[in-house]
Image (cartoon, one colour):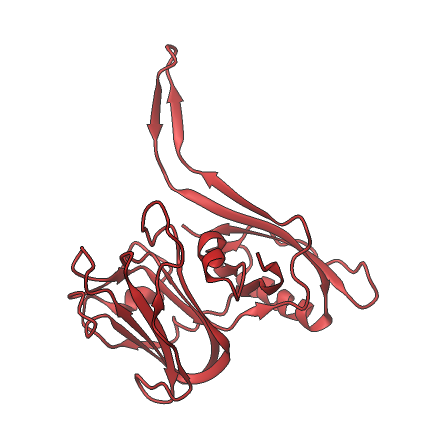
Amino acid sequence: MAFERTALLWRDLVPAGTMSGGSWSLPLTNLQTTEQAAVARSTSASTSHTKIIVDHGSAVTARVVWMAGDNMSGGANWRVLRGSTASGSDVYAGSLVPRWRITPPTYDGTVYGACIVMPTANSARYTTIEIEDTANPDGYVQAGQLLIGDVLTFTHGPSVGLQHGIRDLSTITEAESGASWVTERRKQRGVSFVLDGIEDTEADSLQDLRMHIGTHGQAIYIPSLTDAAQTQRYGFLGRMSELSAIDYPYNRYRSLPMKLTEWL
């Protein structure tokens, strides 16, 4: 896995934008909140109904689009356009790519997020997401949250020893006879790693990140900007579990342990 391309997205541009496009029986504004159970739902699975346009008000820089809690089927495709006009692609014209970069046991968008990483960051007023999933068995497309933004990258990736953890929130009650009653709940991802060799400008950005979102705000952990399958399998929308101190072990470089927990 190309951990040297690990990145974090923490400045989400969607909440401040104006949502339009397509045809939606449950409003697109639901994508602007962190309450993923309140979904936006298209009136049908027609491609003309499943378009999302975000007007940021002025040109803003972005590189990553992340969608959480969607019901896109195994055959769904989607793409990102960025431009100076609504639905425009004069800044960036992405090609259709599969929503699913892996073959999971179950196609469940509440478990595996959908992510598009553009080749480079670009600046535009409008971001358009086009979804092609006309064979969706539900007869519509829905999603719980949309995030768009630039990413924080590092000259040196995480040190050896990075850990991807999973916490099972299920509970098991055992009777005296040994019989078990299982209440199945979701699994929660986590990651912990140490960033060594942080340059001063990177440390400044990490300090801003920690002061802005603390342990309550959202951040997207992107394991690899170049490996879409690994990002879908291991990456997640989460929050900082703790705020460790920035260490100064070297004259020119800094070090910071980081730990993130998935946002469910």
